[in-house]
Length: 135
Image 1 (cartoon, one colour):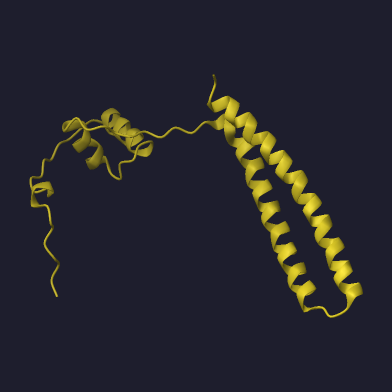
Image 2 (cartoon, rainbow, N blue to C red; image 1 turned 90 degrees about the horizontal axis):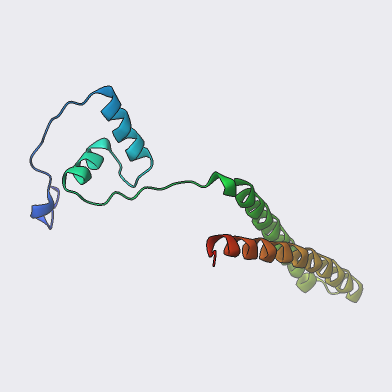
């Protein structure tokens, strides 16, 4: 079975253009490729020649600490949620009232930990909001 034909033949890249550039220009194109949405240097060159926009992505390194802290909070909240689910399963499988009371107390402690993490998370989000929405 052969390959199906492309639906938009006017968009096919049929005409090769071979060019040579010096090392400085090549490095500039590579740098632009690395920070943009382009997959190859050829795509960068095509967009420049056709005067299309090239989307560049920049990383704000001042946010590294905040992002690491947010990831840690996310991980902790996930593990607390897993623990709550395990205790709930044990609670539902238990027939004795003493065991059920024990599971209720354990879940209550976990919810207190969750409350502390959520408060920290809300504080961080409000600080980020102020930074990004600088009014």
